[in-house]
Image (cartoon, rainbow, N blue to C red):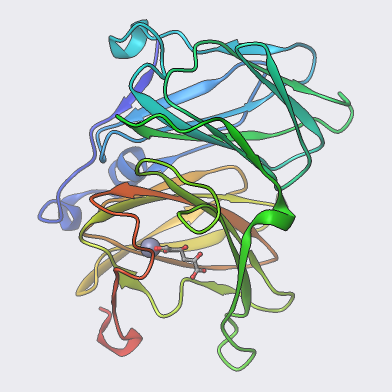
Length: 277
Ligand SMILES: O=C(O)C(=O)C[C@H](O)C(=O)CO
Ligand SMILES: [Zn+2]
């Protein structure tokens, strides 16, 4: 079984109730204990998943739910570890992931096994997978190997460190991009100025949020924004027509993943804040 999200067009967003908006664009509490939860989205066919192996090794990779021999017969995948140290075995080859490392899994992988080094401090694995017709080797990308961009300012409460992991300048892939952004202490706003990228969709998962805190995530057309109130471990879908930005009531970080026509991180149209409605 795989959950399916069909998404929605920009013309319907103003008619959706809060619950409908959440059911369409928000994936709540993604990180299931001892099982891989996978959500198949029809937003550029990105599959989003999450898992916390605590008492056992979690295995996945079957293709039946998506009609292919294996899940990754025609797909590539990024798996970020957002928790304690963990291990991923891909067809018998082991990769040890520290917190904030990302594993790139190339097309053709068949069986994946996920485990935690310490059940008291379990790994938290976050998955983005997109269609691929190219073979790139599996590759562990450590936090130190990622490309760091320091963004924002204290004045705008949007200081943050953006790290690119699956990106042409760091680790090649067919069409997946993936990275992690950390807000600086005292800053609240991510993705400022907001932007659109007509040629790519995007997904965020927010993490390292205290249980009592929330991120107010803004989405929608610039001239008609909506908001989603998001908790730790929730993922948000951002179709190509939607802005994506947010402010937290406390410290947080998020993983961003993208796919579409290109991998040009700078192929974006900034939207001046003053034009938002
Ligand atoms: O805080 C940011 O800025 C981001 O992390 C932006 C995302 O990477 C993004 O929206 C890429 O298109
Ligand atoms: Zn973006």
